[in-house]
Image (cartoon, rainbow, N blue to C red; front, side, top):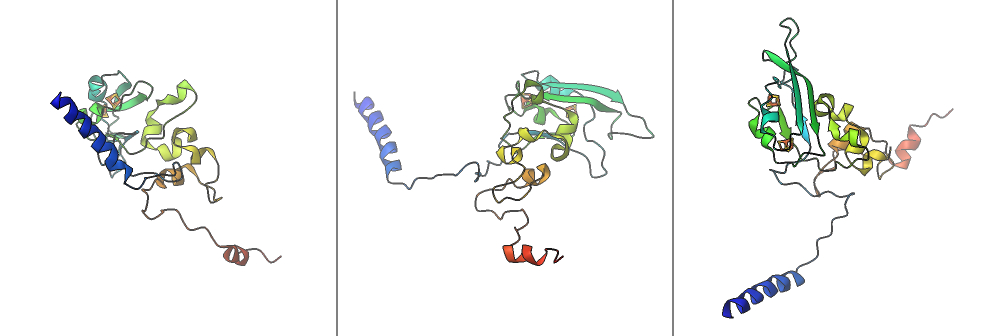
Length: 199
Ligand code: SF4
Ligand code: SF4
C-alpha cells in the first residue's frame, strides 16, 4: 500500500513538474532538432581521400545484419584501375530500407569504416523499389538519391524562401535549430533589381 502510494506520488510529481515548464514547440519540418551524436539514420558509403571506395566487398556487414537487409556482390579489383584499396570491391551494394531496423550492426562490423549511419531521418517514400538504396545512392546521395528520399523541401523545387534548391543543397541545409543557415542569403529586392538587364 505504502509502495503504491509512493509510486503514485512519483508519477504525479513528474506530471506537475512539466506543467510549470514552458512548452517546447518545434515547427517541423521548417525547423529541425539536432539529432543525438549517436543517432542512427540513413546509411552512407564513404570514399578514401584519393577517391577510391573504402568498401572492399568483404560482406561482413551483410553477415552482421539481423534483418538480412544488405546485399553485397564482390568482384576482384583490376590492379591497373582499382575501385577500392583491397583485392576486391563491391560491384553491387544494396540496402533494403524497408527491412532495416537501424541497429548499426553493419557499421560496427565494417573493418574499414566504409559504411556509417548518419543523421538523416526523413526517409519516407511511396514505391517499394525506391526503398532499395543502391551503391550509387549510398556513395553520392546528393547526386543519385531520389528526391523523395529526403524530405518535403526536396519535393518542392523551391524552399520556403522561394529559392530553388537542388538536392545537394537541401541535403546540406539540414541544420540544427539556432545554428547558422548554411544556404546562401536570398538577394533583397533592391539587389535583385540592380542585377536586372536594363534593356
Ligand atoms: S542498421 Fe542494422 S538492420 Fe539496418 S542494414 Fe545495418 S545491420 Fe542491417
Ligand atoms: S561496407 Fe564494410 S563490411 Fe560491408 S562489404 Fe564493404 S567493407 Fe565489408
